[in-house]
Length: 355
Image 1 (tube, rainbow, N blue to C red):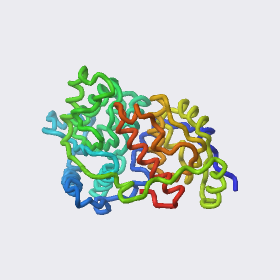
Image 2 (image 1 turned 30 degrees about the vertical axis):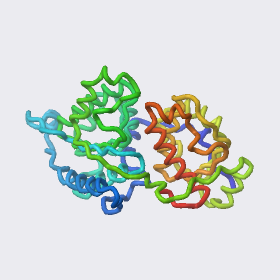
Image 3 (image 1 turned 180 degrees about the vertical axis):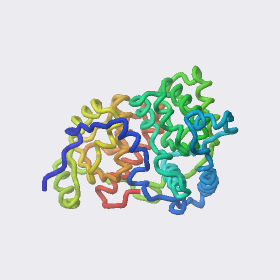
Image 4 (image 1 turned 90 degrees about the vertical axis):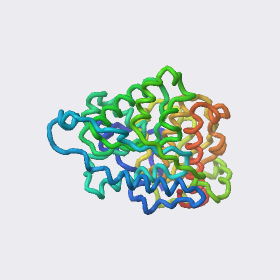
């Protein structure tokens, strides 16, 4: 069978309008709800988080409607009191994205139309500001009832300043905010840049949210065997064709794929993997450069969003990033990527459901 176009040959074009339209839960989380989240009895904070989010969902939709721009922004001269957001803090694999997407869907069930709620990763929002400009981005979201921000990570001082301004203005306009991260809002940026120089901006971010802790183990690997050993390169295409011959299979060599990622903005990675069911990746090697490693983290998130099974050769994904990376300022991102890539590789090679 003919294989799909390799990722390294794709050059997707994404307009600002596409970026706004794409701010909704991915295929993986398109139909989740609070009822489909199964709390781990060993970690009561998971059930408590569900109840906290249910209560928060009940406050969405109370934002004043109609009126002109000044009325929408200032609500007749009064600003909302107290945090307008809720913030889920916990390790990777405890279901924070599931809960955040459930909140987005719950708002829809309460009558909030899709054009007044947004769901995207932190990177997608910063990309949108880059495409539209700060003021136009504020104008777009001021009319929203809910803005959900997944994987909240501050990687540099510019992002800190920009996101603190954006969320402060949206909060003042009465927009409900919800976010997930592996780091408490007051600790964002630690280990990545001189966070002490930006304490005011970080505190502004923290003041927008009520933090909810979600404890637990990584559900993607809870009680499962270790990931299988990678196949040999000669086995890959035949294995994928025999097992997944009726699906869309893309084949890439790791080296050229990495070069291509360096030339494609991460805002286009969602379109890069569109219509791919199975990804065959040949001769995976450890990534040495931080810039490429962070781009691969974004790619891993987009692959996971779309349930793209992986069949690979080379080093296993738990050796994709160096020891220094796995212990450095971006360690939580790298651990999340390894968790997700391993789950996709297990699904591709062993036929398991992608958790």
